[in-house]
Image (cartoon, rainbow, N blue to C red; front, side):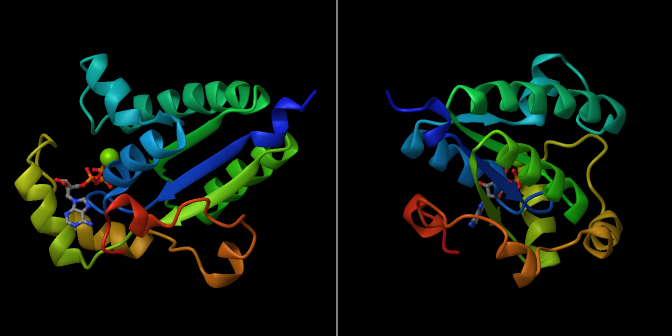
Length: 166
Ligand SMILES: Nc1ncnc2c1ncn2[C@@H]1O[C@H](COP(=O)(O)OP(=O)(O)OP(=O)(O)O)[C@@H](O)[C@H]1O
Ligand SMILES: [Mg+2]
């Protein structure tokens, strides 16, 4: 019998707010029959403000526990938390590999002006994201460098297949 972990795959979608993580994650979810874990949706379902970073952290911890259980069962799991720090992505990659899962990293990005314009148009955050918030976040965000990207498995589906310009 095929070992369940043979098909297990973790897909990490990394990027700043407005970069298109959820858009890409939803496309991959349907094409790959994956389970998508999005903290914003859980915060919304619990009527919690999206800017409550303390509770977001707790929800991410719950989602990571669930992700590991699903990977152990051989599922494809999509995590779209943002994962701004290389250390966060390292922890997810190593944890998933310990379970015998393949791990993909998808990085989505756009210039600050475009991110800001998208966030304004979406109008979801309260209080709204300010232009200076975005500049500060861009300074903090650790974009994956080629030596990090090389540590991950090949993408099963290129992002372009999901209708993204790239
Ligand atoms: N490639 C793209 N080109 C143009 N618009 C896009 C693209 N990707 C996403 N968008 C639009 O930008 C907005 C933000 O996208 P999305 O919600 O997917 O970003 P996100 O990274 O999940 O943001 P957050 O971190 O705030 O959840 C949405 O209105 C979406 O329709
Ligand atoms: Mg999102």
